[in-house]
Amino acid sequence: MKISLNIKFAAGPSGGGNQFALSLRDYLSAQGVTVVTDLIDKDIDVIFHIVPFPFLMKAGSYTFLDAYLYKLKKPDTVIIHRVNECDERKGTRYLNRMLIRVAKYSDALVFIASWLKPLLEKQGLDTAKPNKVILQGADSKIFNLIGKEFWDRTRKLRIVTHHWSDNYLKGHDFYHRLDDLLSDPAFGAKFEFTYIGNYPKNLVYKNTRLIKPLSGLELAAELKRNDVYLTASRHEPAGMHHIEGALCGLPILYLDSGALKEYCQDFGLEFNQENFPAKLLEMYDNFEIYEEKIKKYRRTAEAASADYYEFIKNVYAAKSAKNSRPDNFKIAIFSIYRIFYRAYWRIRSCWALLKNKFLKIFL
Image 1 (cartoon, rainbow, N blue to C red):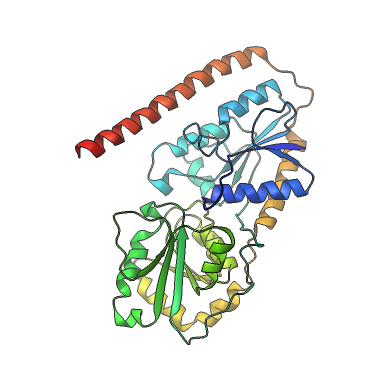
Image 2 (image 1 turned 60 degrees about the horizontal axis):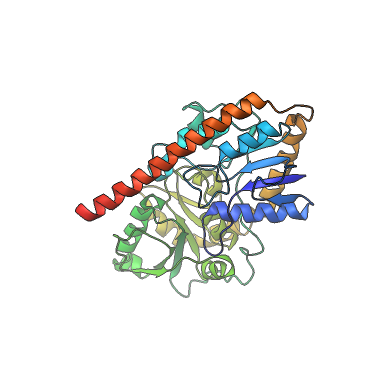
């Protein structure tokens, strides 16, 4: 089997999509699958969308339009769309519509959390196609309990979080609130807080240890020197950050938003606006209870990749139409549509760039 992953692999610290794709590539290759990241070969069996959008070509190796045109020319190719985004996460107004459009030109869907499916169904997503929820996992060769020393109450309880994105919705209202709480001796005598990664430039953290973005073993080592993982990310489709922290042995303090509860429940404490300070103290008082629970956390990339491979094989076996012939009329019409659609997004991207530059100059 030959599978094309729609992504441009990035070196160094990066977002969850790149980490997922690396793990899936390595797992598929280990199963004897040929993995490519383009549409040059004429014998691709499965196209797997990771970054299929025409406005994210720095990360995606081709668009969903290119993939569907390939399928028109080779009808037995199966297209699988991994749904891993939403407008709610970034405060945008176009991502949900785009996700629904990509799904229209796909044969099957994978949701990285259960809450995404009803969210998009309400906006018109067709889920009559084969679909499955497969939860994320992180690389256990990197993120694990090896070398982890658990808190023994001889020092302050160390809290950590990390994000590649600098978006405020990653939880900076709570992170900044914790930073303020640490000025209070009742909290400052018990807790330390570390933030790893990018953050909004207009925020000033006074009591927080700030570290540049890290990745791989360097990130894992930094996570392991802490005791508790904090995530307050809003409308998170899934997120890799809390998974990496949990695999490193850190009980989780999490906000019930997006997929966080689905991923973190039973491995820490849920908090909200009203009880955040109280939950910090509850974790401090009962840490050993959650330490034992987090030792049983098993959400690994290897397990997730095995689920993806099984789903891919099943969809390909059921959907591939090996006797179908290319429809030259459809190919011609869709080729024209692709040209105009790509031009639309180029114009839209240029306009957004010019508008931002204008605002920076005159405001």
